[in-house]
Amino acid sequence: MLQIGVKSEFRQNLGRLGLFYGNKTQVPLTNFQPVLQWSGEESKNLNVQIKAVDSTLDAGAQIQQMITAECIDSFSGKH
Image (cartoon, rainbow, N blue to C red; front, side, top):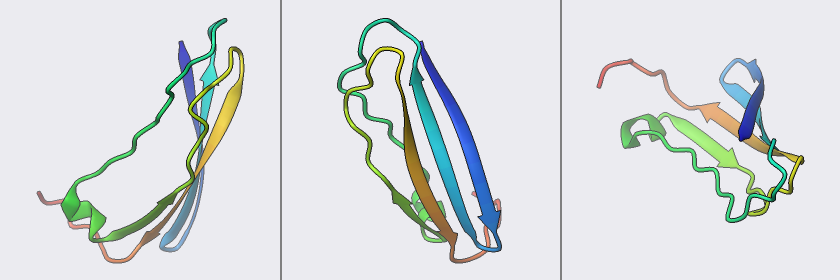
């Protein structure tokens, strides 16, 4: 079982998110690769930097992945 938590902070057009991944099993998770994706249309309006995480999440351990985002233009909500 994988537990995922989020802590976020936003100021004007800037945001910072911390994603927490917790391995609730008694065995390590190997080849662990969280992938975040969004549509090409959305990526035109958003500048995102994602910190990589280790590919092994030890049993009972928790790791944090930091994400910073800058909204460059308004989103219309239309697709």
